[in-house]
Amino acid sequence: MEEKNQQKAMFLGLSAVLLWSTVATAFKLSLQHLTPLQLLSIASVTSLLVLLVAVAKKYPRHEVFAYWKKAPWRFVLLGALNPFLYYVILFQAYDLLPAQQAQPLNYTWALVLSLLAVPMLGQSLHRSDIIALILGYCGVLVISTRGDLFGLAFDSGLGVALALISTVLWALYWILNAKNETPSEISLLLCFLNGTPMVLLTAYYVDGLPASSDGVLSAIYVGIFEMGITFMLWMNAIKLATHTSRVSNLIFLSPFLSLILIHTILGEEISNATYIGLVMIVSAVAYQQYAAYQARPRG
Image (tube, rainbow, N blue to C red; front, side, top):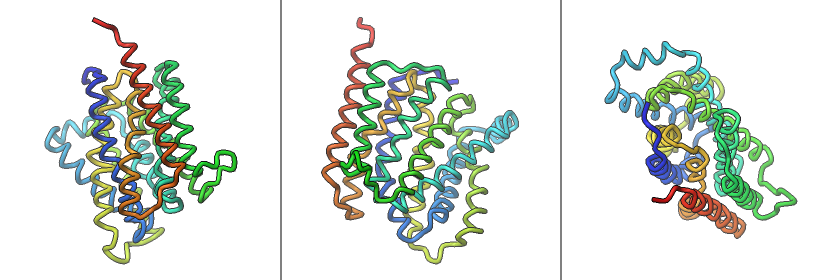
C-alpha cells in the first residue's frame, strides 16, 4: 500500500477537479439528445474500456482476479453504487435542473464525505475545517436558490432532491473505497465490470437504444473524463490523503471554470447569486488551506 503523502494527494485532487470542471457542460449537451440512462450506458462502456487498458498495462490478469476473489460481493455493492445508482440519479437531476444549479448542488458530496469520514474512518475535523465546510455549503445554497435563501426557490424540487440523494451515494462510495486496500485502478475496474451490466440492462428495458448518434460524442467524453481517468486521479488522492477533508474541499474550485463553459457553450445566463456563492466557496477553500499551512510544524 502506497505511503500517505498529503502534498501528492493535493496535486492529484486538483488535477481531477480541473478535469471535472468540464463535465457539467458535457452532461447537458448529451441530455439534449439522450435519456439519462442512455447517456450513462455509453459513458459506462467507454469508461470500462479505458479502465481495461489502464489496468492491463500495469497488472497481470491473475492479480486482478485474485483481488476479485478476496471480496466479490464488495465489488458488486460498489458497482451498484458506481456507476449504476449514483449516475442514474445524478443525470436525472441534471435533466431537471439548469446546469448552474445542478453542478454546485452536486458538489455538496464533498461536505458529506468530510462529515462521514469522522464516524466511518475515525478522522477528526479541526475548527478551521468546520468553518470552511459551513461557509462552503452556504455558498452552494446561495447558488442553488439563486439567492432566495428563505424561499428555497429551486427550479425543480424533484431535481434538487435527486441531486442531494446522489451526494450521499457518492460519499458512501468513496468512504467504502477508502477502507478498500485493492489498488485504485483494479478496484475501479471491478466496480465497472459489475455495474456496467446493470446499467445496460436497465437502459435497454426502460429506454431502449438511442434513436440517433446525436449526443454520443459528449457521452463518450463523459466516460473518459468524468468516470475513467479522473476517477483514478481522485481515488489515489483520497487514499494518499492524511486528512480527507482538505482534499475533498478542492472540489469547490472547479465551479469557476465550469460556469464559464456553461455560459459560453450552453448559453445559460449566470445569476448574481452564483457569483456571490462562488466567492463564499473559494473563500472557504482559501481559509482552510491557509489554516492548514499555519498549523504545520516549523523548521
